[in-house]
Every structure is written in C-alpha cells, then in structure tokens.
Image (tube, rainbow, N blue to C red; front, side, top):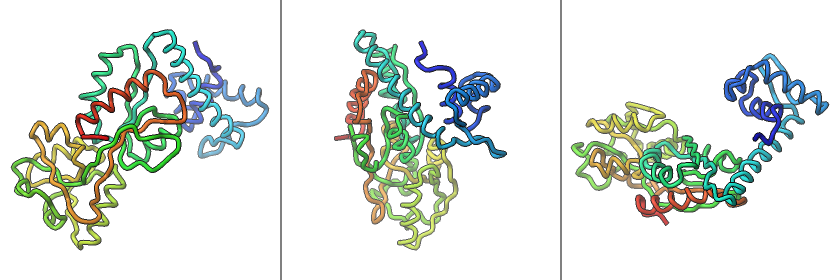
Length: 303
C-alpha cells in the first residue's frame, strides 16, 4: 500500500533527479505520465513548483519547501512502517548502508552475508561514496548506517564503533621495501605510485607531505577504483597509498602488505561506524548495527 499519491512520488523523483526524463527512468514510468502529474499538482497547489528554463527544471522557493517536507514525510513513513512490522514480529524491514570503497570487501564478505542468513526478510541497500558524502547522506536521512573516516562532529549522528588506522604504502610481499617496518616519503621517490583519486582528504595529506619534504611522487596511476590500485600494487615495483584497514582481507591472505608512512602530516586516522541518534532506528537498523559493531571490533580492534 502506497501512503503517498502518485503526484507526490513523481514530484519527489523529479526534485531528486533534476529532470522529468531522469525521474521517469529512475521510477520506470513514462515521462509523459510524470509530467502530467506534476502539472496537475501545480494546479492543485496553485503555485509553480519548478522554473522551466532552457537549461532544464529548477525548484521554485515553493517547490523547495514542498520537496524538503515531502522527503522527511517519506522517511518518517518508512520508519513508521518498520516499527509496525516490529510490533507484528515480522522481523522484516529495510536498512540502507553507506561505505567508503576501501571497506566494501569487509562489508560484503563478513557482516552482510551473515546478516542475510539471520534475517532473510530484511532488505539491505549498499552504496559507496566518499566519507564526506556519506556523512551528508546520513544527516539528510538517505542512509541509516555509514562506515567512514574522520567524521566531523554532528548532533544528528553518533559513533557506534571506531578504530585507529594509518596511511601507508601497500605492496607485494616480495617488494624491496617490504623489509622496512616504517617508510618515509623519500623512500617512495622514483617508484611508480598509485593514488586513489576519489578520496580528497588523502590526496591533500599526500600533497602537504610533498610540500614539506620537497619530494615529488611519481603518480604512475590515479584511479577512483580501489580494486584497480590493489591489483597494480601486487606487482613490484608499483606501490599504492592506502590506510591499513583498506587491505585487511589481502593482508590476512598474504597477498599484500602495508608499511606505515611516518612523519607529519601522516597522523593516524579514525575509521568509524556512524548511525543517526535523533530518531528511533527501527529493528532492521539496530540488528545490523549490533552485528556490524561486533565484526568491526573483531577485525580492527575497535572501541
């Protein structure tokens, strides 16, 4: 049973996607039907909800107010439905998880399949983004649980588990630098280095270290794909720069090793499990949080 009218759902999709065509693709409805309901909604409300320009659709001031309130109403409706299901002992529901790419393998190969076995009726969505973007999604209600680095304080969410981690170079066990317990940036000079381009904070730390040491790394590869850089790092003399927690599985399997980079600005980072604290999370979210925190502790020595 849908709690919201088609017009409301179509309007929310257009506001989110930015155009009628994109919204129609996202919700698998004909664009003409979406446009028809938007026009009817504007007539019923008595004000335009979108400005129609050559560049596309833009929310009017009235449209922004409606979109913001509608998004919150839909989130409240979803949580209300989960609470009702809990009371009925259905043990179903839905949980949305956001994770940085480097921790995706940990999630997919541990907590997630275990959770699916325990609660097969609970739906799980998994999204990958940067730590900054994941925190924004959590605050805006687009995620229920987030695994991210170095969160900024926010009253909307709290840290459920955390673990220190360190920036360093990953490489094959047979790499010449593998015998060194600690590395400096100077030791990487002249080597082909892979740098993840989807993590702005790590990139800024590397650039600051280069500025302070006068060492310019040979960025042989930049990629948004963690998996691609890991594969490259498995073939000497290539190395890639990551935190130690991002190669947890590969280190256990003996495929890759991590050697910490020392000196300022390579300070320890904090890997965290975050969840909203300003509302009842519902059964599905609490159940996954409990399992995730336990596995997080076992893998990373979290607190």
